[in-house]
Image 1: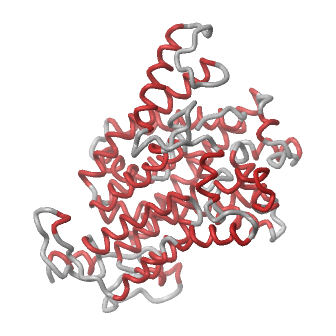
Image 2: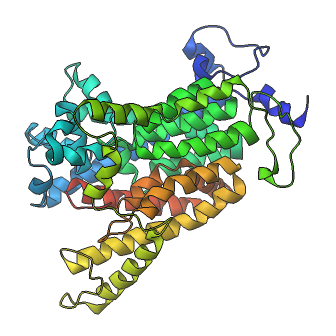
Length: 462
């Protein structure tokens, strides 16, 4: 046994037959799936930690959302963004319970699930193309079982969230240790924007698929890497960013399926450690989800490039590689000046629209999320294998290179919350700082309550 193969013999795989541990000579517990699960302490620990994080965080989300609507009511602007009232009409109790789940972009997913994309209608439906199809297809499939669409979306998101948290626990335990894994799932479930994980949004589905891609790549299960990667690409455009870390894991590791073909070198990119084999052909499946979506739109009377042109419909423009950072810095600086001026007559950030104070506060908050993410990004690059850092930087290329003029970092918190390497690093960071951990988790949970209340009452958050 060598240092490169020692971990293989002790690795326990959480995913059952689909991505089982690569060495067949290890004795396996007999019985059904539940018996095998209970016989594995590592898996049971992951299940317990996942369940605790899941129910605590979702109880918090629903209490905050329902409580905010019951006490504060809804803002009138909701009618402009939900004209067919597709997120309401369930009676007073149903509408109240749907508040933390069915707001803003949830209406788009529900419309697509019910009516489809209809690219043949041209500009009237062009905005729908920005929302990739796997999640609304899942909502529609569950709805066919006589489940109301909003409930179908919530169920899909919750199942995906449970799988994602479980995968994050197992992946973090593999890379950073069991203590870090336990904290990482709490960090993920209690993140300030974690209410999206149980809303009718694609965040939790994409998170589960992207975590699955990394886990299968670490285990050398390349067929499943191709399948899950294609599904991730059909869920969000960011799924294309998974190709880079998968290639890095395939060529440079670390991998659990076999020892390296070449010794490590001082510079990681100086030479590959694994010879390409026929299994590498599975990696060609990664862009198939995006390609299938593009082909569908073309055959349905639209353009194959419509998902990318839709970014222009949503007022995004190319500002150069990561050029949105400069725009965001300027917007946040002018926003801070606006707030400190205590007046609305003079507008410092001329590109903002609507109420000057509201726009200023949004730009300041969005920049604060970017600033808070920077130490975590550096931590990922330093503590985790290269593939994790490459994924984070690649996934952030879209929002940071295609800003919105009025809010350069629009939706950045949603992009950040699904980047699980950030939570993995923060879990490891807090695992060794027991005095800081409760305070930071409490602060994050309070932000989660605040933003959930805003979201549920139809205030724009991110």
